Length: 179
Image 1: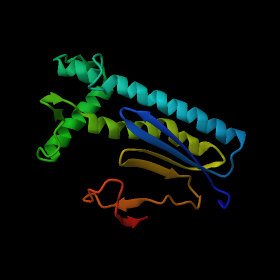
Image 2: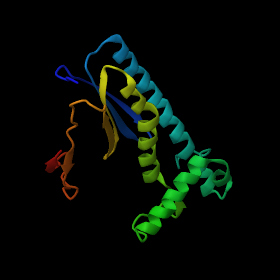
Image 3: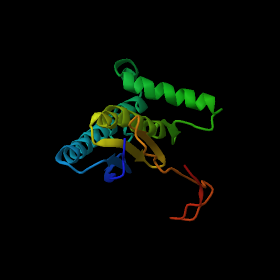
């Protein structure tokens, strides 16, 4: 597929105390593409808001807060909570305690929730966009985590920069490689 007239569409969403970025590579900015971008941005925002309501340690009624107070019901009533909890426990075991899903002695799987949210939103909300004729590539990121895909048979490559995590200078990232 020829992709000479590619257009980058980008939206940012602030949810869960972080910025998320949606990027779409399209062959045009026709009404269908623009409508899809608008709708997917709204859908992603709503999806992230639901995840935040379920898992935020700052919301009194979230499953994480309830679990912190000793309520075991989220483990038995929510497959999502069970998945996050099991991932947190497994991550702690697999890293020999380097990763700990606790903050101030309370269960707080925020890192895992953010990564899980990116995976869920990408698969549920963005991947279906690749079925749209003029959309050839999708990208979703939050913090330093990103997911991206390109429609099969399309000659498009995302540019991915690998930066030096040891660089502590604010707003300065040493580029180690670009793919």
